[in-house]
Image (cartoon, rainbow, N blue to C red; front, side, top):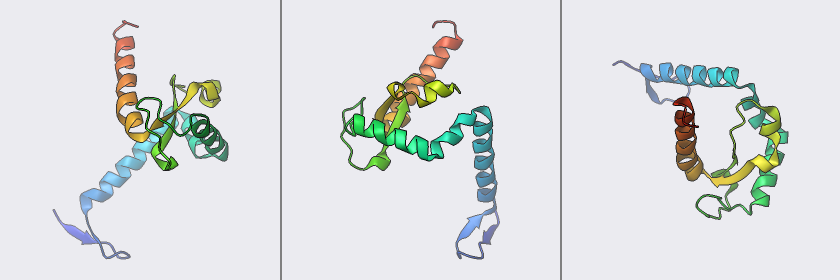
Length: 123
């Protein structure tokens, strides 16, 4: 595979990396199109709500109990997935504080299992 040099940084980048970046952007656009509420995560309103949830829960993960002072490692997680329901998205009682590892592994695994069960007609 040919390697080309980026002009500004002097770093080398394989031509496949540019394709990967474009693919990730396309993936992000598709996710936003499928659920327009995703854009709300970047708003000041969401940041205020997120902060209030982290404070309410004492910056403690509700799954593993870890108390994390670095709030960039915490997630305000929707207990029941909102699936585009704006009222559920903004409902503070539907939010919980999770550490990033629990959110990205445990919670996601639970959600996938629930979707699979619902699809198979078991729930």
